[in-house]
Length: 166
Image (tube, rainbow, N blue to C red; front, side, top):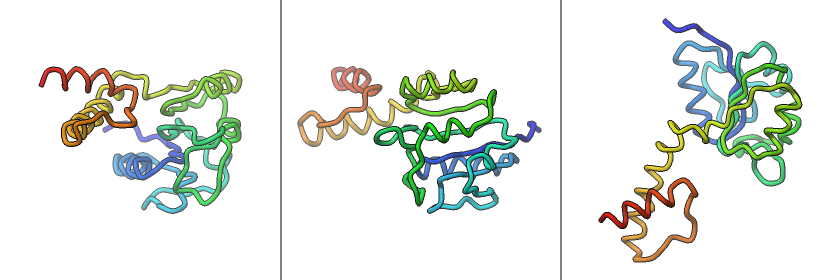
């Protein structure tokens, strides 16, 4: 059996909700913040950042972490939350995970002595994230006989390779 830890899942969309539920099902203590519209069963929802982060072993922020001009990506929250306030509330030394992290947020994490990992830069996720997007894009290109207006960056080379091979 793996060691149970206390984790904070913060902001994001239904993917974060599912992540919190899976972590809780694995036996971890999960606290949530800024998931007001989709409470997670058996997880403690917090309205105060410092209380949510007190004693946690890791904070898991969404992908992408930022929405608009420096706001936490939190479409399921009832209120906006500046990312600087979120990072400032995390205790120094706490492992912090986020996706598609802008440079200024990395700098803020260094300033706050937070080990911040951008999980989208890890090959395990980037490759697995690119494949379904690329396959969907390929299907769209063929059905419409045109290039899509928006192509997620990690998928572009993959899609072009597979379209060329077909």
